Length: 182
Image 1: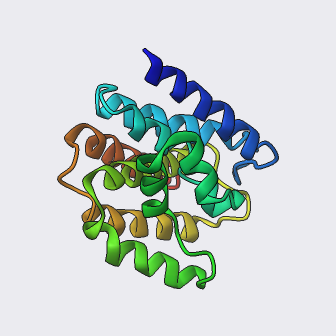
Image 2: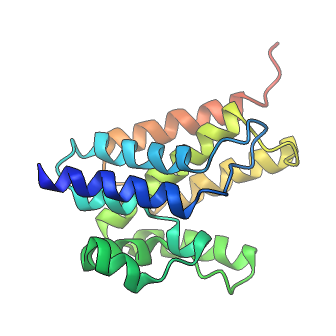
């Protein structure tokens, strides 16, 4: 039971750390909605058996987006959580295209637990493309994102059938959201 209190503390930390961040879509949702969705996907896919993984899912963007020091995360939530977050964090000092290339190249080299977080993150992002795409994103850019996400997920497959099926549904829905109805 104590571990679920830690999950709630992580949700609180995520909400505080990302308080001013919004999703890029037209709905301008609070960013915490994305973090909660990723954590929910991870928790559901693992039947809630790995609370540290759920905590890491809640906090997966803290270092990358909010520059939360890794040491702060390790002190508050433990080394296991901090290591998982570090493993899924992109190096923002690199150009965007290089970061995207590295996600494809490194996907299959990640630990199974990190792969679950990445898969849930990509699923959530694709769901957003379907329901609340960024007004700055053209149809071409949305389709390119779906294609890139599929490339990344090639290296993530084999860790969780349920989550992979969720990703496949989200990718299909994102593509259908820009396809004219004939």
